[in-house]
Amino acid sequence: MVSNTRTLAIIEDRQVILDSLTVFFESSERFELILTADSAEQFMERWGDERIDLLLCDIGLPGKSGIEVAWYTKRRSSSTQVVMYTVFDDKDAIFQALCAGASGYLLKNTPLPQVEERLIEVLNGGSVMSPHVARMVISHFNPHLDKPYAPDAERLTPREIEIVSLLQDGHSYKQVAAQLYVSVDTVKYHIRNIYGKLQISSRTELINKYKRPT
Image (cartoon, rainbow, N blue to C red; front, side, top):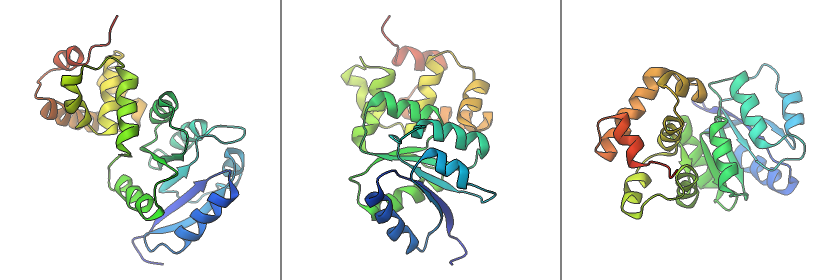
């Protein structure tokens, strides 16, 4: 095993897809596949003391959903990154997964080499989404987003979009940090980036720029 490999777990209820993922990642030089499961319950039962760097999880599981798995995983191991992997692209489910602590959302038609690359992006501190999914997240927290502002919004990362939405809901920086399992300093870092991208300088400007209709 290469010294810089990261540990990976996969939850997928369709055996043919799970088999394909297993074969691919067992030959990966960048991941060590340490756990596979076909349900949330099986995953919870099998996860012992192993450190899991990243969990790739279907959202539409039998029994407990992938969203519930994300909540469970982040509470047990806040450093574990969770990426949802599914054909289910409902915007409400996407947003719920992000609020549960997921760092990205990949559709199952993504080629496996690209899946691996995007998982590495997550482990390097990024968030991953297809452009289609990212736009759905934007429309979730502001379905009436004005078209002139759309290019600004689309420059935000999924994590930055999530922070904007939490601020819109009236959360303090400390509350945002608690929701996302990060430090207050990390939240402030993201907010500085948001301000720079949107060319604004205050929370009030941010809220007004993407104000939800009443």
